[in-house]
Picture: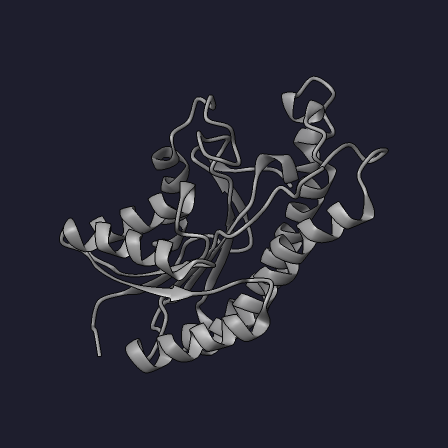
Length: 242
């Protein structure tokens, strides 16, 4: 059984998730690359190993609770515990639009992945996290989930009309705070990370920030000391207002 820290990153086959996996690999962690397509996850593992990292691939479709449970059983058998869970898998559902225009299906599709899938994955991994000495959970969120920022008519955030994505990430923030409260006595820190708008499929390839810049905040929150914050939303500069 490995003595290295073990991290699971969901949605790690591309974009920010892939970069989070790379950065953990550079730190010498054992990286479990989670993805819906096992072949693509294995390609990322091959890349990490070629740079001297220790990595393995696992198929995990967050909208399928059975998939998360199978992944947890595989991690338990291979490593015996999990030190960090990064809930990165997320979507901006097709047709996401303003509140006045979004369809019920689009709203449901976004919440199914971004909220329900996050909860199912976290529940499956919690027994393994509780076996670690200082486990951390990082939920990827966004400045678009900040009511203070979106509610400011002078803010650029107020002009982004993806009602499904924004509201699902507000739900992620609440789940982050509630889980942090639930685990506070166990030494498990739970925080949400805003990577900013990065050049990815989701953020658009003309975005100013790189995936590496976006990943850094998640890695920082995942490696907090025991006296670090919990139940907060952070970007690269520090805590963001809810």
